[in-house]
Image (cartoon, rainbow, N blue to C red; front, side, top):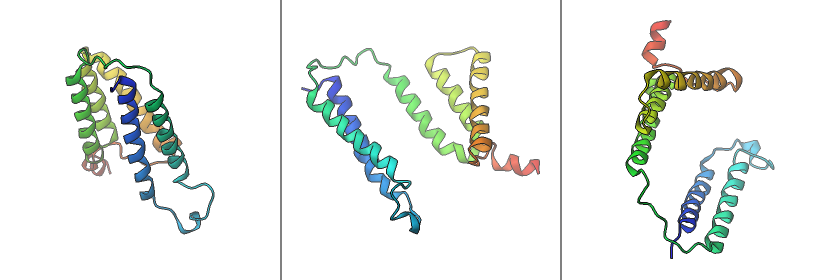
Length: 154
């Protein structure tokens, strides 16, 4: 019988196997192929740990009850998943600040927040902080705005 613990273990197992299969698409430079620690090392360890822990949970679960999923907000969850997909497609053409801000605002709207001051002031400082962190602290360039706005700026 599938309990909520076992369903979670199966989802984690599927994710960990898929994650482990994708690791080998991470390119390595020629001198990294014989190194002890590469860009693939930590993802491999995470994948193996996920597989082991999900198998342990799958075979040691004592909960025999079926999960009660009647009270879940499936529509809200589906809408947020759809927003994540849209965000993935929009982050490059719309820029990080605009797309991430809109993504967070729409997620808050789906979750029930309706006060515009809260929507704006809870999202934009976070978005600007992460953009600054990625660009200035970590040195990873993320386009802040759509290209046509950056080109107009000079």
